[in-house]
Length: 456
Image (cartoon, rainbow, N blue to C red; front, side, top):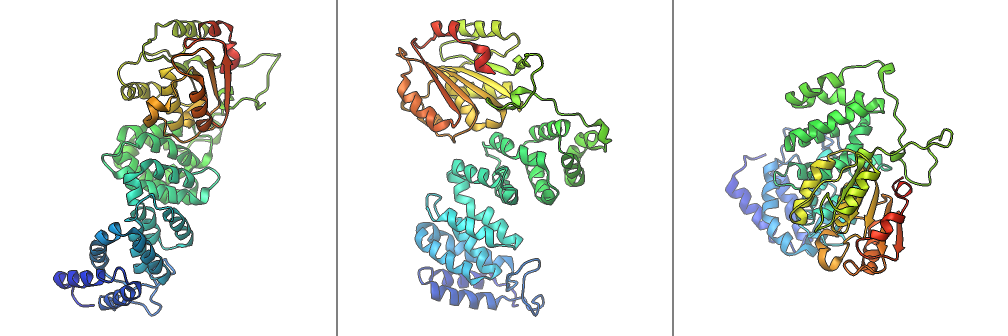
């Protein structure tokens, strides 16, 4: 391999980019360029990348980086041609050409309908760790930055509980987003990965290490809190075993925080999981009733979110507090964004919340539930302000299966019933709508409703 002359390398890469619209010529000149920089001192007889089934030129990384720099502008300006060239590069089957194919996917707009099918198919085909990493990071660059909601939807599919084989892909895809110092999606990410860390399969040790270290660098306190919560409540023996195995790779301060919790404990010390009806959805007979009694809800996990012009001293708030002593009835002020920021520390990372939201508080409850469905056992909405005409930016949400009850009056002149029904049916897959003859404040209905039955 000749010494790399940067001026000559730039000239060669620039010349290669001239054939961007001529795939056959591009591939011919690409192979010539890769051959020019072959490192024969490292090249084996089989010419296969270590730990891979791909042939390789063992080209220095600087060569591919320069080629990518020259292709970037053309690829972003001509996504159709970039996709066609990416297909040809992928089919060529070399390590270097597949890395270039992954790079080109990352320059294609996320709205391109052919992007995700390519990504899905290629991640299923690849065994090489470098190519897999490129597909799940470089290839998702624009989607991650330009349409984060679409990106997180894709990651949720990777992290689906029934698809353990794709969990490594989901973790790998999240790492660049977690590393983004300006990232505002950390709360959603923590919710998504908590079940994966709790499951902690031994086959995922390396990926979990990368994930936890990245989370700790992005948010030290929240990562420490999450891991302590998981270790204190773990029912799966593999959780402790796997986290203990990978703990030496954690930052030293995190190791110190978790040291006591990671100590080996006799099996007899494991606490049996308490059965709580809040863990189950309605219509499932999963707990035994003794002598006709039913275990009551934990009132400290019921929260009432008041309306826009209301407060914790409103009639409904006071009545709820009387019916369910110990429930949470906070005050919220300011804009919607301000109120959601006030809500977050109240709910924290606790699960099994029953959220009751009235009017504007119903909008708050809906947004929180759709963004953090694993924390909510049931959602009760009283004449909720689910109006796209006024709150469209907040209602661009993914549907959830959290059991939801909406109580709405036919005489509501503040929040019309019909548009609320339309929005709700799109957001909630387990939905009960109770239509009553009442106005927006539901004063008459409040006295007639069996709240114990609705909440449980």
